[in-house]
Amino acid sequence: MIDSVDQGFDLGCLPTHRTKVCESIPITTRKQRLLTLKKANYNLFQIASRDVTVDLLTDSGTAAMSAAQWGALIQGDEAYAGSRSFEQFQNTVQTLTGFEHVIPTHQGRAAERLLCSLLLKPGQYVLANHHFDTTRANVEMTGAIAMDLPCSEYQKDDPSAPFKGNIDLELLEQFLSQHAPSNIGFVLLTITDNSAGGQPVSLQNALEVSRLAKEHGVPLYLDAARFAENAWFSKKYDPSLARRSLTEIALSFFSLADGCLMSAKKNGLANIGGFLAIRDQEITDKLRELCTLWEGFPTYGGLAGRDLAAIAVGLEECIEEGILRGRIAQVHRLGNALVSHGFPVQTPFGGHAVFIDAARALPHLEPKDFPGHALACAFYLEGGIRTVEVGSLMLGRGIPDTPDFVPAEREWLRLAVPARVYGNDWCDYTALVGRNLLQNRSQIPPYRLIRSPERLRHFTATLAPEFRNVLPDVNECRVKGTPFVR
Ligand SMILES: Cc1ncc(COP(=O)(O)O)c(C=O)c1O
Image 1 (cartoon, helix red, strand yellow):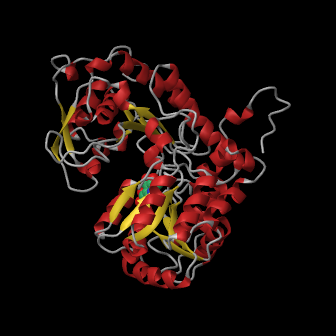
Image 2: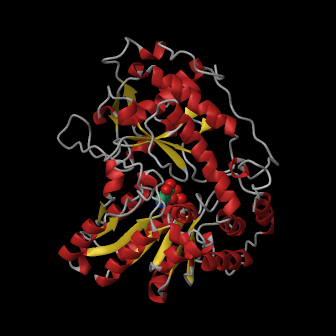
Image 3: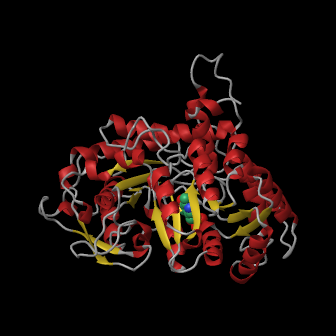
């Protein structure tokens, strides 16, 4: 633990790691980026990483592993069944979550597929604060219906409310009272709530959700991809938890649920992996059958033994107070810099990303113009910075200008910070690029969908800018004063 008292300043804001292995950061010209963007059909998922200077697309699988994790990789036991690495993985997950049964999967969405395929029937509901996009798709693949019930503080963007990931308890109770338990597959709490800005769920909210679910005979699962950040915020914002350790707080959340699914690519600090951790033996047996069919024998579940070993170490590290403090301080540094340049940003900041309110940042664009995506393309074009829209392109339905079009609740641009990867200078650079974009915002054009798949369209859709109410050809019109990167 860092002792900041004698130093006279807050050491907690400094990075918690030093560099042991380094990787060059690609520098490109604006002309190259323009060509790259056009070739990618204005879809940032289609751009090669060699063309990206600061990659804030996701914190998923992009963390820098520690020396201890790399060491564990070498120790990995590659036995098909019952490897040492599985035992290490299982012990760690059992200790962290309190759940007895552990099933590894190759990543979070595989855990979603197993759980949804087993528990859901067509027409049933899954009730969540928010479903992540792959979770929603996995629910819908079974014919079930994914319902998001976010709390009103999230909807109203209330900066004084620190737990915007909470589920709306009134709506949940109403829904549970109006439907027979057999019509509801399960309740899902996503901690932290990625789609709502990486916002935490309070322990109080989770307790109430658990009480309601039990009262109505419906199982409760946690999507625990960022459980450690959720524990951090719970300790910070809930005075009753101030003296409890992060591990204890995390355990309190898990103790309320029937099981959890987790992508280990986020707080697990691993580049691949996930798992299900379950209380009930019978459900576990059935899940293990599906795992064998789709993922592999249940003691490796789609992962190499070395991956299991590295995830086990990552899971131990991620809940360490010092590591979390450094991580969250960096996200908040980026958020504060963007706010100081005038960006409308969700506050308090979440744990893994800064969410810019693109609808307010670009008031000349409507939801059907995909303002979050427009801003994402502008960040790339002007600064080589890759971010992701979490708005009507990712979460909306139907094609704009048709009766089927349903915009998303919010038009966010998410700047996700990979753990332990970039120096703070790159956060400052990103904010400076943003400042110049904001000063020239009227030049940022709307975007039109050219081709769109039915599900998870943001990954593969093709788009194009439309130069309506903006300068004749914005592509030729450089946003002035972009720093550092030519
Ligand atoms: C909250 C949440 N759940 C599930 C997933 C899916 O995990 P994976 O990418 O490992 O399939 C993600 C990925 O970003 C997520 O953020």
